[in-house]
Length: 337
Ligand SMILES: [Zn+2]
Image 1 (cartoon, rainbow, N blue to C red):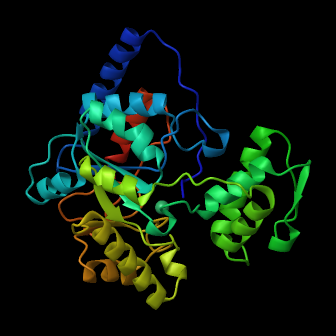
Image 2 (image 1 turned 120 degrees about the vertical axis):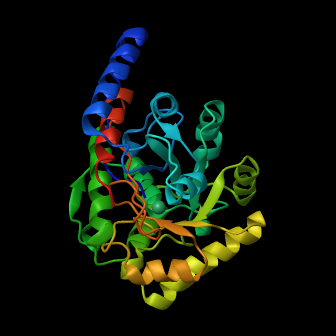
Image 3 (image 1 turned 60 degrees about the vertical axis):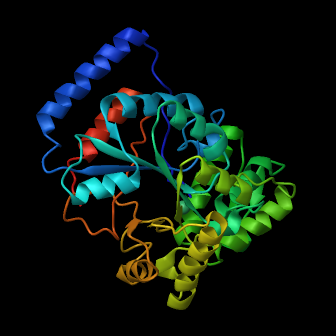
């Protein structure tokens, strides 16, 4: 599920002036903070790319913002596939400001909205797919958001789930409530989050359509040169899952996607992904045993030569204007893992 961060509206500026300012600011910052030695690989994480902005999905860029960010990556950074990035990291041959793009979970807009942008700019990408949601199922966070979006009345009674009676308000208040509940149910609720979300969706959004990819679309992405990676079957927080179940989640997801694509999966992303909070060394060992070459976290920073390949950091600036995004990305490159 996506991180929850505020989204700022893009600033208006004459395009040529904005471009000139961007070039000046980023090249000055780049000279000042010296992030090319030793060589380092930044891996960016996205979830969805929306056709139009959505208050409930404020941490996901819309296609206009995504296009501007990818243009920045193409012009001011060195986009590489994850496989090439890791290969060149091991051989000390990374270009300056090397960046790999990844997407988590398996949303259909990755194919319909993001892929055309990536192809036009010739930027490679890797998709980590939670295979249990392909072909029409919904993740718990999407069920919960849709239930809060469509719940009738002025308040919703969540006392059965330990979350009290919450006022609903307009779209903005509802979007904020949904973010509050996502945070609450991710780690703190007594009921399993999947059960809460499924019950609320059944009550308030019974005709919810799935935003996830179909199996045919996953094959299509693979055929278009997008690397597919594993992300478990049902996206559990591995550190809160019995070891046997965690192993089965990683193994069955890999086997399923390999059968679908007819090739081996090389990379894995831990669900939620915070090191030692959402997964531990036990899960890294499981992924390695199952044949993964590398595994991605959501810990900040960038990979350098000595970084553990089963704990590769990922980070995406939350800024939506290209210049601010670029500044944050360069600053993140100072933090080596
Ligand atoms: Zn995920």
